[in-house]
Image (cartoon, rainbow, N blue to C red; front, side):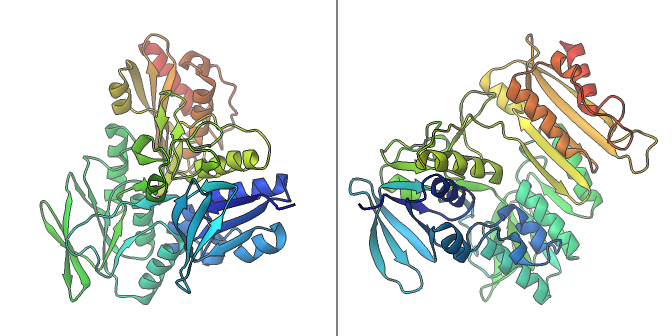
Length: 451
């Protein structure tokens, strides 16, 4: 009897999580994974810390090699193989071996698309010059680290003030590079409200990063194909290295060409089981859309946590089980040196767009009891629905020990708590961990007063 075949396109978080789950539940399933790069199953989130030297070896970022997947799990992982076409009617994919250049059609019974996201790269003069770098794959991280280790990089420019921009700014600080950061918005971290983003901007300045806010990249200056500087709508800056942190877009050209329906921001539309609109084709990870549990609308977010959860759900279903993905709230954390940044739920501009009336409060407190050594500052902002008091979102900026408090808010959001219920949460207390009144509870009390 011929085995059923599962083909997976993409070998990182979502793809390998799904393949592993499916194989565990159905050992007889024939699974082949096509990955166009040289690596699979690695921590993309750890790349900036490898570049900055906090992680001393790229091997520590690799969870499992293709050889391990083949030997231990019986999953046929083929790196340097790019899927160029999906024939949904014929249930087959056209694959190019990037080493030999040969093409072949590969059949499938079930297909999982886990093609991830692609970095936004500006189509500007000089954009193909040496030392203009995106940070989206392990290979790109290795290239940047090699370039920094080679020496001669004195002035770096980071374009974009989001998660990658901040994490790469920290990496360059650790490498002793003089940094400028270009950002189109009035503050960095567009996923925060402007008042909270202003706190992050100030810390960047304190760390010696020169900020050029409300400026837009217009061109790159080059000489003989090598980067010499960047041009904005207001100035020209010399640069030895440019890091592009302009965000990502879902990598869905392959799916769109096959007629697979797309949803929010061009991501693949899926149901709660991660099925697409075409029978036998599934999607997961940064190429697929999610559902926002607060706005109750389709939502796109590219995060490793979401990709792994997508992959788990898809894999359980492909393995003959039943699982659903309930949704997300955009919970995310990052840091820039000693400053921790966290957010969950909706922010003010999203609430305004949805027509939801809200009240908010911003409080300043300490991460530990004020008298305890190394207590640091923490700022918490909460947003709640006017009238009902339902928690809508939260943002935290502060010293070490601040960011993971966002998990309390994420749990409260998931449960549909209002701020009165949050005031009565039985949170842990001891001087090394928190003031008697945790900053999250203090913020809830302040919002409740306004209600």
